[in-house]
Image (cartoon, rainbow, N blue to C red; front, side, top):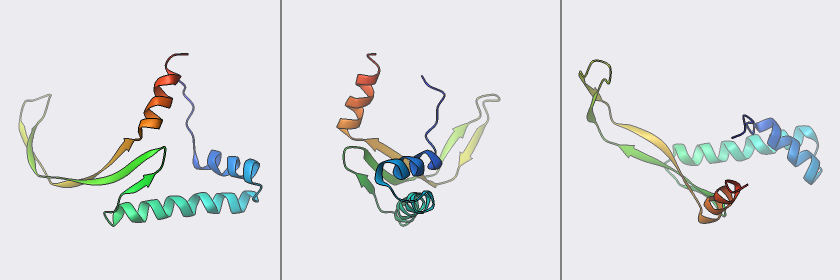
Length: 100
């Protein structure tokens, strides 16, 4: 596996090169898209990107967990967690990358 991480700057640079927007406009576009996605998730909406996958927020109920070191039971509070479900096309692309 690669140690490379795709960052916001990488995305805005790709938009700058491929679309032709200025670097500043490209960075603002990336920030705007990520902001819209974050706002939707905070409001409990799903974010579905065709051929990529679906982001959603799931409610997890309270439960009793266990400290693996001590074995002591610990209450875990209810919380909201972010989940991602890749599309079948994304799964296939990733699997094809494993065959190299």
